[in-house]
Amino acid sequence: MQTGFTICNLRFTSGLRFSHRLVNRKSQIKNPARASILIGLLWCVALLSIVVISVLHTARMDLMVGKNYGDRIQAHYLALAGIEKAKALLYKNAQERSRSGKNHTGELYNTPEQFRDITFGRGQFRVLRRARQDEGGGIVYGVCDEESRLNLNTADTEALGKLKDMSAPIAAAITDWRDADNTPSPGGAEAEYYLSLQPPYQPRNGPFQTVRELLMVKGISSDLLLGRDTQQNGLLESAEDSSESSARTDDQAADVDTGWAGILTVDSTVNNVSASGTDRVNAQSADEAALTGVSGITSDIARAITAYRGQNRFTSIADLLDVTRPQNNQNQNSSRGNSRSNQSSPNQNQGNASGPKVIDSNLLMDIADDLTVADGTGAQAGLINVNTASLSVLACLPNVNRELAQAIISYRQSSDFLPNIAWLLKVPGMNQEIFKQVAPLVTSRSETFRILSEGKVTSTGARQRIQAIVHVGLNNVATLSYREDDL
Image 1 (cartoon, rainbow, N blue to C red):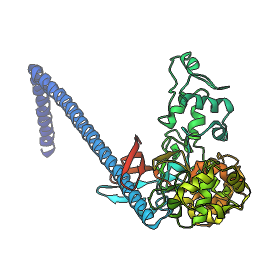
Image 2: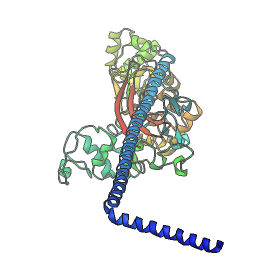
Image 3: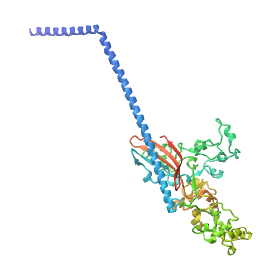
Image 4: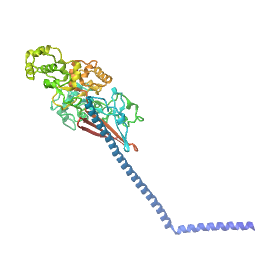
């Protein structure tokens, strides 16, 4: 009985299940529209999901773009903060040097405590440059000066010809580009050549405005001008991330190829004043009273200078080494009128030629910074700072070979810089004849500086780099050029 009941129960349950399936199938057959609606709803949900995801992704991208743009702006102003700090410190240094009567101190050229990763707001800034080979190479934190470079607008063909890989035709083409005429020098080029190019253009026939303008001159390629420094900032492409942890080996090399642009400038100018900022006495035109106002020049020396210059024009202060004491000095009247009348006397001139020298190298080193042979106190363009110029630039000076250039560098490194240009006479290998040729072309002070500043937002790493060239006087700081680099 129990077994039969169980079997009947199983059959009844199976029948119910079968009947339920039939009902479901019938209901599905009877309601196909409901199934289609469900499928349609599912597709709508899927499409809406895609749309929502796309909108969210677009919004996220917009937010990221806006944030990156904002970070770039902040990085820009962080870099600008580095520029302004460097300008302020340069101006302060100029004032301090003026008060102490020093032409050069070497400060701010490598001052990491002032310029390395200075925290400001949401980020930091750094003022950096690539050190030269004589400075040990690598990245240092500080400014560099334009007077350490060869001025493209004042250098003659002889000086340009001493540059590495410089040929005589290219040097001639450079001087042709900047001179006022259209007559080509031997091997050079003028308007006729440039107008034959496609597209044609005219030479400037005036001073170069930028160093990069050299790329328009006949024979000059990007490799010659820029070398590996394609951004013309002294930092190679592989050194763009200048953090020591990620820099490659060649980023820290002492000698890198920055092309001619690494040692050329169009901006170097120094005012014709003493280290203290006072007007220099013009040895070519000053009277005896003004000359004796210079410490170290006695009345006898002043009379000798005024007598000598009557028949001999000074081209630089180095010519003061040739001033002789007149043999008939006892017959001279100390007044200005008699002094000038004596200058025109043939006997007086003969006495000057044969008399003893009144200024030696030691005295010249004492008085050189207070004297000049140029009129006015205006800017003197293209003077090379013997305290900061590299070996390659010093070797461009007349009759200065690489051995003498290295001797100048070694002397300034061991003697804490040259107080004025007459101290070149202390350099081994420098004689009076070479000094006379060099003196009109050099200075011991810089007033024009190149500042390369990089701003960085700490949270995102956004960076911006600004390079500015400024002239620092005792009364103001003038910006000569300004450039931003995208990183």
